[in-house]
Length: 368
Image (tube, rainbow, N blue to C red; front, side):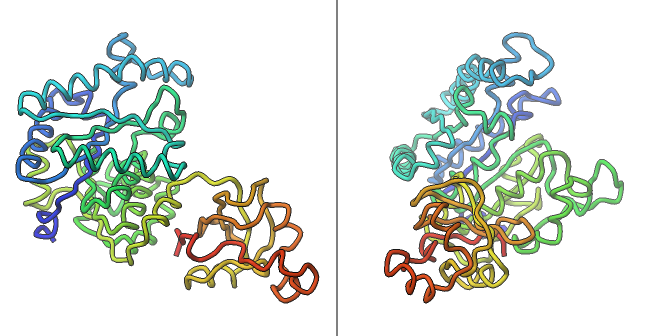
């Protein structure tokens, strides 16, 4: 498997705030960036997804305790973003590498045209051997500030460009079989198939046994990256020569995608925010898992108001979202016709409602 990692040409590297802040007293960021320069000089294409704007703003203003208010956090991000990029510029300029800053919001990801424009910009930068450095635009976005650390953004970018490898560098060694802060006999998992993560789902949701706080968002990122066939490694960035060690030794946890790669359109659907949802029965759930379209007969209820063309969640009777898709009907029509067969609907209303509620081509199953 290490041989496969070495073959990786397109690499997304997510660098966490603790590395930016030099937690532990050593400047590991400089070491990581120097290794990235070596990758670029070897012909690899590297995209950095960085955190740290807020923490840099706190440093400038000598604030030791992170504020909770959104306005305060947004102001700190505005102050700290420049310092963050100057730090990257200083390191990479010494290696004669050029960088580019991209600030992205979830609205940019949700809009298909803007989503593709971001892809085109990144590809143009990479073709000129420029290193894109991407951050959530904290000044106008509240999502990253509330959820933290850009894990999911890094997986969205990995899907967007079809990355071979996603590296999530953090303050954790990787994924353990149980919480190492609580259990002294906890063992680091060197590699695991993404499908095998299901048996740890209860622990991820409660943070009771696996990793430490915030690990659930990293697993979400792993699962999303797997949609494009991307391998993911979660490892500590507080190590000397960490990138070299990931490629040549057993550092961190490697997550192996073995499911069939989905289309770029379906990958985009997975990243978009929903406008509402529908509750579906077990028969409909099985139909979606078999790559079939969603029909009125399998719908039990409607959640919130939405319009034709919106992205909606398909939720099972256990309140678990199993799929997302583009609806052919608004919430009012779906509520009116829920539970009815296609034949019954056509006999009553003619061809007005003869389409699937969500066509299989416009739907992605996210829980198997």
